[in-house]
Length: 168
Image (cartoon, rainbow, N blue to C red):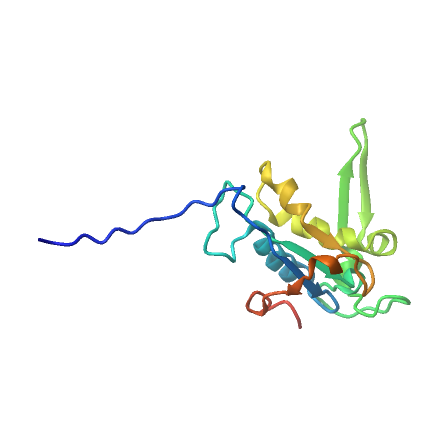
């Protein structure tokens, strides 16, 4: 009589998933590489219970988002020590919905007005293009400065194995 080994796969469900909280300092992180690591955690791909149609991601709190950097040659800037040539040439555009409503913002203007949107846009573009993306992006908490208001959730340190290429 032969004994059959049965392997079962599990499918994650919204009701059973309990998200964790992570904290990381964004000082000196390279935007694209850092955004891909954040997107992986927001989607939940770092967990063995990852299911594409369920939001199995975790919350991520990023402090000092104004100190992120792009790759490229260093450039002089009066307020930003990690300013590069690529940040000066980077353009962000959006459309207002009106004829001739395309608005272009440079990386330098974005850094001065809304420094958190640089990282938010990079992460948003790396998330899947479906209805889950907005709920995944809402779990990303970006804070300008070193202090954040999510101490009550007791965030853990960000997984170090996901940050292999983020710092230069």
